[in-house]
Length: 402
Image (cartoon, rainbow, N blue to C red; front, side, top):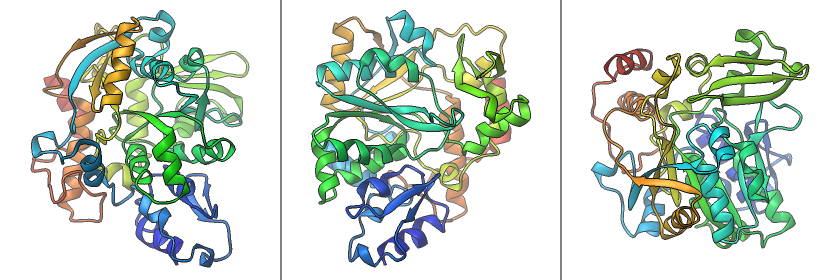
């Protein structure tokens, strides 16, 4: 009963990352994502036979990082690489295009690299985080075939959604599409696991997913976080929502809702982040990855403490991202962006306090100390040895000492 195994191992243990990979990998097309979670669309899973592809591709418990790193880099990461993974270089960077820069949360490096990848790798389209057409407050995968359209989906999306499930429809209609993908750690882990599976979808993923870029993730949020922020904190009915932007305006941005009657209502980023804290999944809270380390390029905000920046009337931080180059493909795309003057870059380091990473480390250390069932570490058997600071204490502590 393979799907039952997925239910017992992942779903019943609250380890589902809501990534949509199981639906994508299923060779019999009998798995469907019901809102955030997979369900079997037949009365039994006897049709599955001996197939366990849905569980094999799932990053919920077994992230597959060691196997993926061995395949990508020919080695495993060392303890000093625990949180940043294996990379060849790291740069600060921001878009030279004023439209891309202004519409971005962190300087437009992700948008620019996606557009550059479409050109230099001859990609047909890229899959990014967008919004649901019918429920604009809900996150949904979005496909762009024209690089000039990419700024429409710029900025961060602090919400869980089955990002990878759209690939099944795309490849089902045209299995020869050359695709790029942006996502977070669990999405990258699932894609690399899929590329090792010996079935139709694994073969397509190996041949046709040609570029991956990930955004560092401290933790994602249930849709209820956005919904209650809009309704309870901002006093807006969901039926009146026209558009939602998580980091709109001057750096570091505000959470903004545009209504159907042309109103613009906002709350500060720090207020939104505080609200989202009460809407986290167990899988996200116990996650051991700020970055998977498995994408061609990883990007984080260049500002080590955007929470503090959002509490200031005026931020003096020069908006940019930190770009980690991991593979030859990633280096090729970055060089294209630099040579075409689409991206300003400079060598940098990531050291010292980083609020997103430190929140992740402390939460992970807490869950490791519980000896509970949690997603595996990128270094098998590794345990974070630190004095755990609870999240509600960590933010004010880092704001004071930063």
